[in-house]
Image 1 (tube, rainbow, N blue to C red):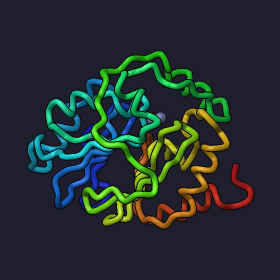
Image 2: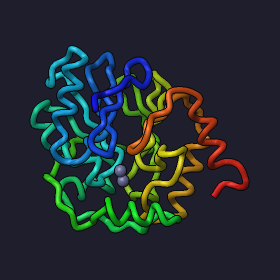
Image 3: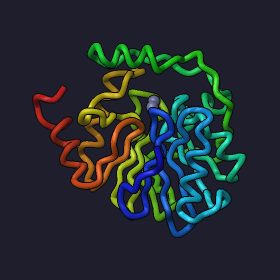
Length: 234
Ligand SMILES: [Zn+2]
Ligand SMILES: [Zn+2]
């Protein structure tokens, strides 16, 4: 599967059951997340398809330190020289390449099956060095600016990243968009995860990208509100 445009300047790159996002900014290219291992060719192909060269990838921002988001990180950095960014709570997992913190499956049978199938805390990845810590509440001044919002629960060092010029929320694994907005496969802390979902539902944005599932191109924040702000929501 090849990359697909989400909105002007933002493409989703399938990285094997996980997504990465490529942003074409004034200061070069920025990648959000790095998928499973051995998927670097998908990113390099996407860069070339935009008429750019791998060295024009300047920034690699990780939403969190799970294997399916850092897997091809080291290989991508080798090919591009991109600077890397991650929340300090997850940096040790990325820089050692595992093991990873355990998660409890999210409520429901399907998520229990998926979590046990897809998430293996003892797994080992090629370590990837992190150049800059992501600090919550600060604007990250690359690609025109991202807000950095700490969204623990699924993973203690997870951040969500609203990209300000395009009004796109990169939600990481705060939720998925598979058969509608829904929980990630698991949580380190369910109550924190719910609080993070409600925090994102209180924001205003147009489009949204997820670690897993289809991006939403327009009117995304109303879907978040319907899912997590009404009284009957889980
Ligand atoms: Zn995750
Ligand atoms: Zn994931």
